[in-house]
Length: 266
Length: 242
Image (cartoon, rainbow over all chains, first blue to last red; front, side, top):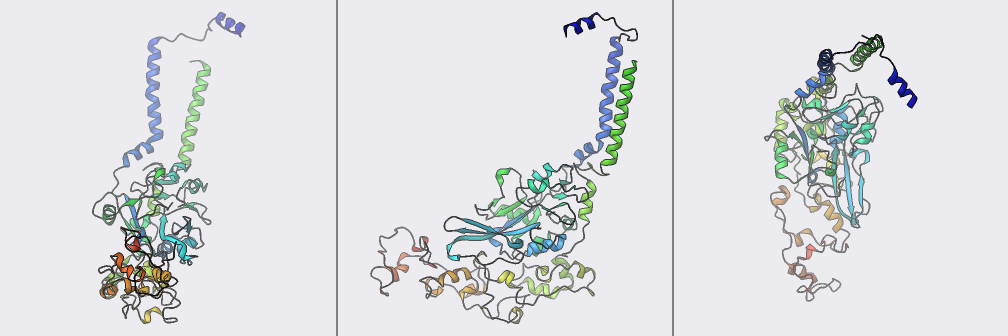
């Protein structure tokens, strides 16, 4: 090593190498420093435009669910399957109803046979029940959605108006989002081989209608509205109820709000 | 310029061209226009066809039925809850007719007794409630007020009735303890029944000096659980429950 360095120090400068003077060096450096951002801006134009486009959306959609009004009829889950071309088999659901049974000994039982579409069997040993109720569940359309963060290709995304959607043409079917969702709201379509989920019936919103589950809820346990405007049912719901969201400790900032939610609901 | 720098420059330019070309090929057309996703996907999702037309669409043609329903107990129940998705019917009213479920199995989806349903929601036992008769024989689904005002409290308070039926209070009628105005049956939420408001009320059977059968448990009403009404500790519909 010592030998090498000494020889290189001794070596004569080659004939072809010309000394660069300071003025030329600075000129070349200036050209290069201008060229790099110009080249980058050509490549990154779409992203820059996208950043300017966001943030001035007309809507910010959200849903309210009143647990005390839910009768567990399952019409919402059935309507969702009809509206969104969801396979009839159990376990493929965008929205479903869970029955909570809290026993006098503190045990908490949760079931949701076929998402609640066919009703619920009688509770065993009804006398040992402390309290029992239904909880409709669906995608919470989180503001900080874990499913969006993990998608490796940008096939799932949050629109300007707050809906978390899946681009079925672009989804590669890796299933990361299905695992990432803390609410179990995503499922894998066995026919299309893509991840699927509740869209807040985005196609209905685009035509000025409410989601199918809200349309058919016979007791108005579900209602839909715009978080950005005061004059709509959701704003009133949020004003006059004590509101909770599911798993608030995860900081996902859900946009599905529950009234009269029991502390045992996970 | 030295030869190696020239070659390196050519290599860099070639790589940059390949990178841009591959990127142009792989990244879909509208990707990034509105964020880190394909902007065209939003439009294609929004273009999905409707199945449920919405109750406003039904009202336009079926006004008399809609008006009848709007003042009934089913005023909040959208048409398509029972008649199913009707967008096709709205598009072609003559050729596509939505179903009208008449079988006995349908109404109990909402009105069958289920302990988890909110107390006070009208529920029946589908086995015992007028067996074999279609619901529509007695109830008009567009104005389902019962033709006969419910005689028994259990028509709506099934969970309480089922607990009381197996308790020592089984033989006590509800009205022994609750003063329920007749209007409560027709308009349940505006006029509510009351609950016993004094300890002496339970004492008429359970006090030590009460005139009642001797097998009934007795307590000293003046000292036992002082400061509380009896039903704040004991569940009167199932008093043996722990």
